[in-house]
Length: 349
Length: 277
Image 1: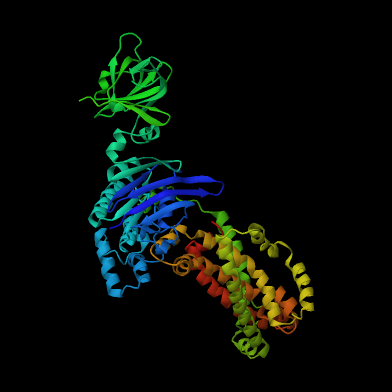
Image 2 (image 1 turned 60 degrees about the vertical axis):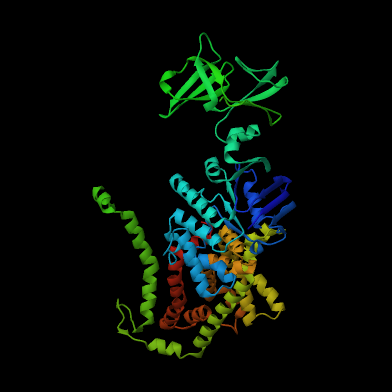
């Protein structure tokens, strides 16, 4: 139905701050893409440019091949759900949902039917006469979602919609939104700074940093094959150790590991669950700083001789104690140089 | 639950300071009102009697039979209505501009509205009267309108600015998003959201204009006589207290309605928001 195509979009704010820098992305029909990044990475600005609330300094945004950059928000086929819900507090739920339909001059009975349908869709049948302040946070967010959905936008834009909700509710709404989105087959762009949200909902994730795209990939690829050290550190936990390579061996303090790349500086990357440890005779490669028992597993904080910290995930806490010298056995690892991945070990079969 | 916690607390100390303060305030505020109110409905009250010898509406009939009283009521009401309307037409768009737009000299202009209140008013009025004299605006309805407009600027700009600034921009964006034009957003979202606070500003302006005395007297005399001006001349020139008392009871009417409305607005917090709270 609807394809969103963004080409080379740059947004300069006053003082030449590059909020978004040369952003290009194609979102396929019915796809849910997450923009993920820390605050200030430009993800919300990008979303607001698609919705028409900011004007790009350069670049193009097309929806189904039609350029929308010069259209004001009210003439774009997009629907936006705001973080703060932004419900109109002087109208009840029905009027909130009917406002856009009235502007489109639908007959009264059709407005009523559409509003009832969308209330049923978000699980709020019978809530039409409620005032917005009589709703819980989750219900308010459902109304905000319904307000966009009732107009059947081509592109649905969600700007950190669950940020103000508690963890439990957030997880439930996440599933509901994903269900509704798939049922309606609506092309969706979702902004979040929570990696859980992105990993659990998205078909593809766009990781952003300082206004630029770091990597675009499916959630599993992003976790297993992060393209840059930033992505590696941002998605999940990653040990990133700066060191140098000489003669095919990476070294940092007493830690050495085979790394078949050319000589020079490199960043060695290994996930805690892929970093095995073994009791060492003598001083070992590292020393255990702290053992944290999570029941299902334990996290071992390790210290190299130069105080570099690493984490290892082990099945059993009781096998280890603080102060113990250990050797490091990375099972799956990668290396970065000049901000790009230069080596990836194969996972052991 | 609250009952339980209250029961667990030690018996509350009697707040003598509070009671004393309340008593003093009652004497200072309520007592004079009571005396004036009583005088208004008194036909005969001679010293040393504590209560009037004869209650009655005689002075109401006499006061309301005077043509100067009726013309003062008409003048005051039409002045307050005209000044409030003009002030709203001039100030509300200006307040919106101050709240939402950036333009050169914005802060200086914004703070200049307080200048009218920052200096001794009478001196300012005399200076303005001098200018008005040359413009033939002395003793003229529109001259009084103009001078009273100056007094309304502070309330009608500052409070609505805070009201407009207090409207959640996301609400307006959400309305744009569902298809509303900027004008429609203003009409359907911004105005209703800012409405109660702006209502409070309009009310304050109306009541303040209704009671304004110095400007009306200095610029309007002798042709334009508002209710407060008439009341002063009654008190100064008439040996009969009841005329002044009846007039001041009539003057309470707008503040009574103002209080009724203000209760609604103040309890809603809009009034405090108007002052940036």
